[in-house]
Length: 300
Image (tube, rainbow, N blue to C red; front, side, top):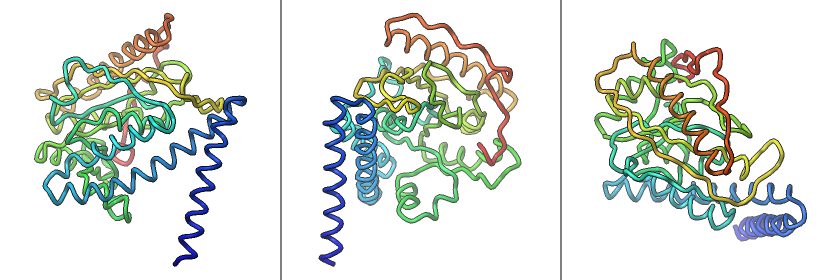
């Protein structure tokens, strides 16, 4: 046992030493900063994930399991600020994050750094969504279940609407908000843009009768641009928009709802990025799909 601990300690010290060396080297070579912050991010994520398992168990025991992902996210927020110098500045003057519950929060998806954005922005009693099969995974599945992750039945491939039925019921009954990325994947774009929206988040909001709260993150390729191995410290602006009510909408309204919400978010994304950069930015051209794509239950 002592031998295992010795090698584990040696590996950890080597990892930290190598990361520190890359930070020093980044003073001369910019690409070294990319790998230094990348390694620092991984160790922060692992440490906070382990913390999340234990804090979720404790909070569940004392009756506050719904804030587990908020607590874990805050830990990631502060460790990342300390180790990488990256932080998100949240603009929410009307307090929509903490006053709207339950809600379906949606945001643009740029890179893996959005995990940190969630850590900064997550309100209490909010969680991510995940496919129901993840419940069976050791540690990760336990953490997700303990922290009230809203699970989606992706085995139901009939439609996005059917796949969201169980999740909508959970949102209504437990008043648990969720955060989703309607683009479905990361854009890795250097300029402000949105990929076409999938409709799953909008079906979920309509079925749950919960408002949609758009969250717009300025394009942050000046902080992280994976294609060029660029990763530096910086502050990234985020704006929380006015909730969009869905109480009187039906599935027939979902496509229009998704399209209009995307257009609203795209305008705000361009404006927010323009202000952050101090230079005008043209609106991206519309896609042939009108910004919305059809999603099956499997991809919802």
